[in-house]
Amino acid sequence: MDINHKLEELALSLYRIDAIKFGDFMTKSGIKTPVYFDLRVIVSYPDVMELISDLLYHYAIKDSKYDHVCGVPYTALPIATLLSVKTKKSMLMRRKETKSYGTKKAIEGHYKQGETCLIIEDVITSGSSVMETVTDLKKEGLNVENAVIILDREQGGRQNLEGNKVQIKSLFTMTELINILVKNNKISKQMGADVISYLKDVQAPVVVPEIDRASLPYEKRAELTSNLIAKQLFTIMATKKTNLCISVDLTSSTKILDLLGKVGEHVCLVKTHIDIIEDYTDNFIVQLRQLAQKYNFLILEDRKYADIGNTVALQYSKGLYKVGEWADCVTVHSLPGEGILKAVSGSAKDVNKGVFLLAEMSSEGNLITPDYTEATVKMAAKYPELITGFVCQNRTTFKDPGLIQLTPGVQLESSKDELGQVYNTPEKVVLENGADVIVVGRGIVAAKNPELQAVVYKDTLWKCYIKRISGKIE
Image (cartoon, rainbow, N blue to C red; front, side, top):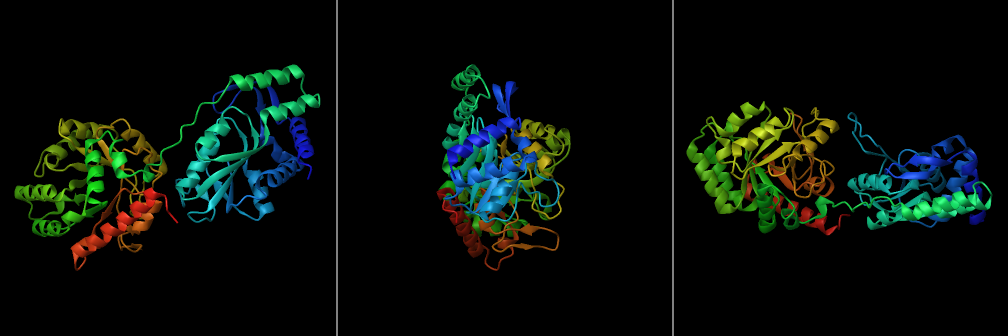
């Protein structure tokens, strides 16, 4: 194939089908431009589609190594489809809007963690659309290092992508395309000069590389948090080398204290349900706090507050349990709105306290939707000094490395109980799902030797964490 001849043929074809427009336009990046590329029209021209796919194949991907192709939605999807058929490589599809039903997947198709995906895109200005696709693919454990592009507008996209460790190959740069059109008298020399001058003067915003919170060590994340409880918890985990939280779902205070005397040195956090204890006394709290100090763990009361602000303020600070006086942190639903956070914050006053907001649940058939989760994360951003983190299942739920992902529903082997609680393995929740603190209940509490079982969980979870931050995920 004579690449140069075919590239010229493609440039003229794009001009012929009105995929290249001159005038006054605005790009997705918010940049005014005298030239606009509307490559969505190519779906109506099979000859142009075939020419583009042939050129991308021979010029950019023929000798590349990859397992899948993924077109940036939506213009690049038909080109990616043709290349998938041509190369006999699996195609993946990224959804711009994640479904709130069915599998709720952002990436459709069959793939395995560690496999490599090649990005296909039509035009880059800032590179933001490519980065959105790269980010979603990486969240699924796929390696993404290369993208092939029809047109590079030369306005910073290449630099932004390479700064985010994505190398690109493009069929054209804007300058090359304009020169072809001038050469073939499709536009005047003056117009061509004006466009090239514009390229030099107008650049897209710099896309700062996104920090993957799951790849950072706890010590580093302790420096990035605004919540003092999160800072303490990160420090405890790093010092004790444990990310294990035990859920002491027992109804006897004596049995709880006895259990913690055996496993306290192996955990970073103890999760209580204070209202299920049948022989509760104030002395139980005194002894619980003494164990927390002795073994250096924090206490999370899993109260899951979900009422109006005034009621929650009373539940938190008054009544029989006076949770705010002894629990380092509590769990809270976002359903009532941010008034519930104002209530806890006001009740805690000057005391260092924390809140884990429920963004997702591990029970089968729960009613939390992606929109609800997103709204919960946005609400938390208004209270950085109060929020310790989120109770959630996926690393995609939030990005802030100063917040903690608390993930329940963990056992050494995947399973499901008769009440719909779904259990995942340590490897899945830490390596794939990005959990920071992992909650284990019956897996330890109901064991014949809880201390031995706690050590097994602690060691397994910590090894997964070390593998995660080392980047050696297979």
